[in-house]
Image 1 (spheres, rainbow, N blue to C red):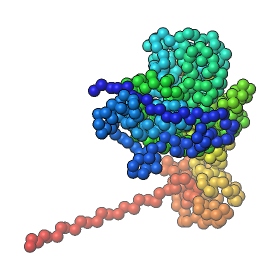
Image 2 (cartoon, one colour):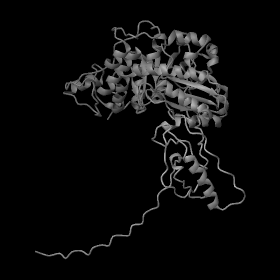
Image 3 (cartoon, rainbow, N blue to C red):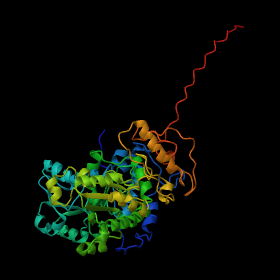
Length: 544
């Protein structure tokens, strides 16, 4: 079967008119706000009355006649044809929604963000041509631009964030694309989209912006002059860590050459994933705005902590960076990074002590994640290059989720300063006993200090040591005692005493009954040996 070029699917241009001030609703040309459009844009009601576009898992679609089939194949009509081309109602509905939200004409959806990047670079550059990459980018993008594309004769010039003023020097007649993330991964550097786009356009190059960290909720690159916008939809657009997808949004004429690469490289999103992604986008504004607020609180806490050298977060930007944030962003996002006053090993220990933050790559989900960039996103980058870019061994990157800010801050506090959160030692004299946990741990202990274990006069047998310890334990047990499950200060009478085998006197580590309310591993009662019951002989069977 011969593959045909996928016909274009055109959607209305809903470019936002004007930049919204922080906190205001972002409205399209139809007057509806971003949250409303996230729910309703692109949805197609089917004949069965589904409130959202249903999942069409079909690989192919039938036509009433050959003429109708040719109308779709030859682009005279839009319609469904073959899922690998993207001509599937579930995929098309998602793409209409993405285009509406970003203000583009079309929004082809991909199997991943890297698929969208690769198709874009391959479609708009040829052998002997040139790309400029500004600032830090995802480690996979570094590899694609620095290792894969040079094999095809496509070169890339990498500029650090503090070298943006050199852009005019490196742009040549062969430059076809200026690519950057804003905010960037992992240092959250911000770039002036309008200024860079104008400079690139003068040189005849396209400006391609990765808007993954900010999302359309916080930033609209197309409005500020970018030609194409890329998303790793796996992140905030998906938002639940249960899908992998990508998207590319822009003008139809710029996306037409990309469609061929997407189709023939098999990069089209699966309809099942498209259905999940459309579900997630309906709640995108609510999620991102909540993550903005929580991340700002976490960033402020880290910035004031003595163990933290620096915090990278757009909401804490100063100078020119603050001017850029104020001009093109409505929120600072849910991503931040921090440099600890620690070695790589000490930083890893801090990460390992966290309880709410999961140690995992990726970002943008409802759960909070943390990594060291040197172990995940930028592990493959040359250490000298990492150092040159300020991606240090003590840097941590946080993706702030939907948890309460106070809980996340408490988790970070105990990880950064574990000594101040360590439980107090048990007051009992027996070796190895631990302090109570749970509700009893936080209430004050009303008992006077128990008497100390008298020192041994000289060498003594294990039995003598057990007797001495048992005497002290029983004396302490006669004091007002708060046992697990009892109110503070209530008296507790120990049951009949059993031999005390404390850790110092027996490897069995049994505790006397006086110790048990404080002991995390009370002694087991001896196993009862029940003699086996004699088996009854089988009854004689009578055949009737």
